[in-house]
Amino acid sequence: MPDCPRCHQPVEAQAIACPYCRTPLKAHGHPGMPLHQATGDEPLCLSCTYHADDTCTFPKRPNAFDCTLYDNVNQPRTITPGYPSSFRLKVWLKRHIGWIALVGLLLLSLTLALLR
Ligand code: SF4
Ligand SMILES: [Zn+2]
Image: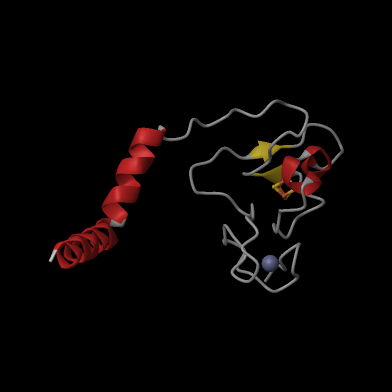
């Protein structure tokens, strides 16, 4: 079982985050991803983002000549667009609807009590 590069606790090889310190981990990747292969005699890890930022727990590191999760540190990253803020607000409201209703009820009863 590999160790977390940050807190050095043992973590599952497939873990996407350390269960102890919550460090995001890049390990084996997911099924269906392309397998990157080294073209020269230098391991992929030497030019990999996840070796550079020390988040990889793949046991082959730092000598992987093939890897599903290789990300070239020298190439600009594609930025995944996030959800628009209106969508995030909707999700937040949906998640906290119970608390919002409770606070609303409390405010209403407080207002009614003060009006008496
Ligand atoms: S290329 Fe090396 S450092 Fe990069 S994800 Fe694969 S094993 Fe980890
Ligand atoms: Zn950790």
